[in-house]
Length: 438
Image 1 (cartoon, rainbow, N blue to C red):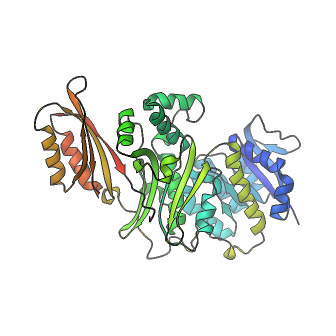
Image 2: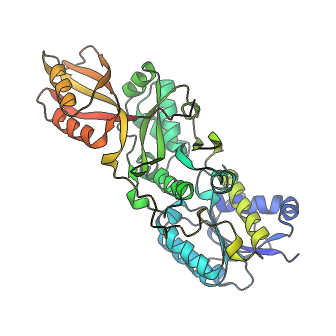
Image 3: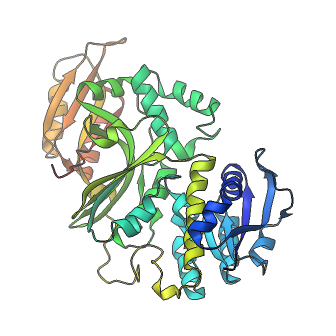
């Protein structure tokens, strides 16, 4: 059959990995696709050192690739928002299929991109945008198609998981482990997207849209980072039978959908509690299948390239199929057109249990006043640990509460922090049981 001709835009870590996997495994890929997949052109500003493009047409202009009449599929691996959006829309306008690993692009501009692709009848594939080489999008969109998805929860940023893992295993401070992660190349020089949960929120937005058939709504995702987590918090969580993970969580409720990324205490025996280092894992609860777990390398050159090339295989198989009969981009037909589409709930309406850590002056009546404030907000205490006074006569107090609404907890924390006998901000970590239907 006629080869599928590919233009790769970006030859950095993922682009170089994609180039190498496509060339190294060309025979097996052709057998799986039923036709050869050929690299027609590459666009790059720099080349990954392991990537030999001898004999391949090259350019510094990504838009030249998008407009090349000899190319069937544009692979967007340049990252970012603006140029990537223009590149993808240009490729679509020129009748090209698109494969991308760009989670930020899909989370923020995906609705526009998918509408343009639908009108042109082309494919936009994005498996590599979430969790690197883990085929969670295909599993959620196709393998679990019979299920009503109840919740999705995942460790979808390896940097944050690396930091929390080493804080727990070695009792080290956040800043110390972050510096190590940067030295090892696991964290960027500016780690904001990773440690503040923005990267994970991009991915969670995509997963939730596919799971529940709602438009991509990144602007409604709640994000909270891990920079305020201390070694003491990690130790106390362990003593209470929990492990702290930076989770992306989306749940279906009667009031709508939860969409949130934040540090979370989860019971030690849960599957996600035992995912360590830079690995990613996503757990999905379906009403028919129950809990399923997708685990593996969430980043890296060839793990991510594995997902990019898998998308190219799908495009090669479906390229001659009428677009009305292809699997919908976000799993459901007519996403965003249903009057019954579930709304995204405001974070203040979310209900969870909480871990609280506060520093109090060591004098009578302080703990009683804190308990009274919580009680006035309808918040009941499940467990309480009062440590010995630290330097400066401040006493660390650890509280675990029963489930309550976020708004009530926000109000209570504001009042507690206003007390003269409380030093600094109250540390709050949400607690999830991740009920697996046992």
